[in-house]
Length: 265
Image (cartoon, rainbow, N blue to C red; front, side, top):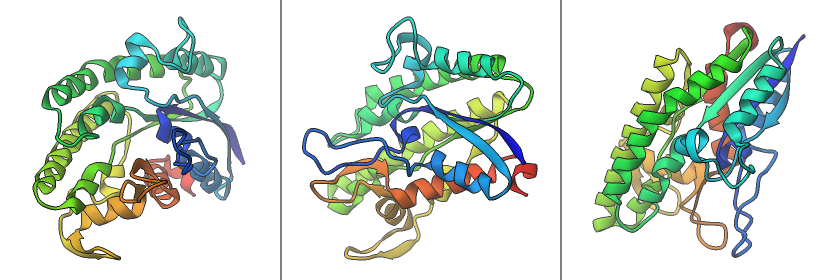
């Protein structure tokens, strides 16, 4: 059996966040996120990884590199915690997933209309700051550490269900999330890091008509958003843009497809 660690870097989704249904406290980390699913999957393949989750809700690529976040007291921040962990486990076998970028554009899309100036700034920060973050992580890691980057679906396609002018807003959020994914894939590939194709698993670009229970015929990417996130769910659990249990399972499967072949059996 292979043993080692799994370092899960990112924001709230890296912690398996899901809504609680409690007003003003509608979110908590769970043990049913994608990282937990990956650990369970690998255990069936004879790979025993100890999970270390250091993510911070609201983390952006920019805050990883420059400004820090509310989860750590400066000068400590998530990036430094990750580097310290990797250096301390330099000779171990390890997996690192990197789930960053969504919060750089989330505030721009979680509104009635897309904030275009915010989008421009968010995409620019990902383009500027992702490679230095990846460079720092890889420099701290030992030779037996496998990195995987994540891209994203678009939870804001739920706007399509409101009809009218909201359909055009949903179309624009799709364009923004596709642009974000392009930036992420470019950054990961430039750093020689394989990408878990979460966007593909969420059928991000598939607009074929399909039946959504309780709604009617919608584009497939909209249906997948509703099936895999809480963003089409009504009060008190939604709308919430985090994945649900099924969504985290789909993300885990995308990660598993990017694992070293020897680990997958």
